[in-house]
Image (tube, rainbow, N blue to C red; front, side, top):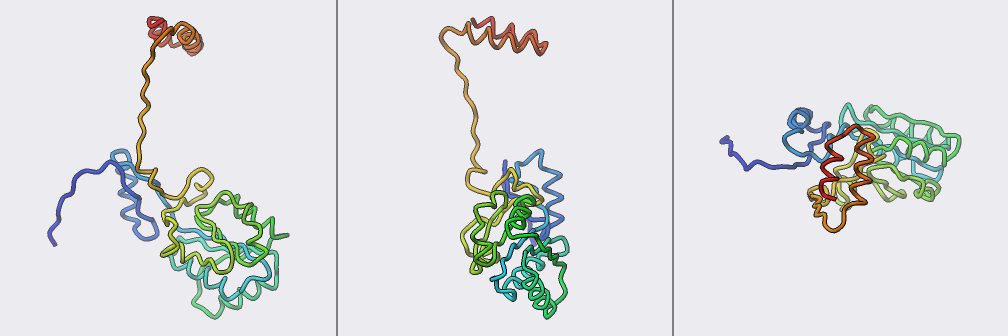
Length: 220
C-alpha cells in the first residue's frame, strides 16, 4: 500500500490506549511537537446501583466495559447485598471478566466514592441511584437511570466519547470544539503608567528581578 504524506498539524486527538497502545506511545513521544488533547489511559466504569436496579442489565453494562481489554476497569458499588448477589449470579452465566463489586454502607456513600475516583464513566442504575446524580461532579460522563446504557455514549448518544481517564476528570472535561481553538493575549499599554509601574516594580524588587522593574519604570 502506497503511503501518502499529509501536511503537518499543530494539534490532534490522542488515540485511546486500550485500542492503540503503540499510537499512544508515539503520541507521548511527540507531544512536545504536536498538541494533543489528552494522553488517555484505559477505559473506566464505576456503576452505582440501588436495590431497584435490574441486575441482569447492570451485569451487561459491566461486561460491556470489560470488553475494552485487560486494562479496562469495571466496578459496581451498591448498598444492597441482594442486588450484588443477583449481579454475581448474572455474571456467572457469562464469560469470565475482571469486574469488581463493592458494598457501600449506604447509597450516598457509594455515589461519593465514585465521585472521589473521578472515573471516565459513572453509571447510576436504579431510581435510588439516579436520584443522587447531583452528587457526581467529577466524571468524564454520567449515565443516569436504567435506560442509560454506557454503550449509548460510546456510539449514538451524541456526547463526545473522548473522555478524561485515570482520575483526571477532577480537572478536565470531554473533548470539545474549544480544545482546538487557541487564544493569544494582546497587551497595549497607554496613558499614565506611573501607578502600575510602581506596583510592578515593587513586586519585581521582592523577587530580585532588577531589570523587570527598570523596564516598567522606564515607561512611567
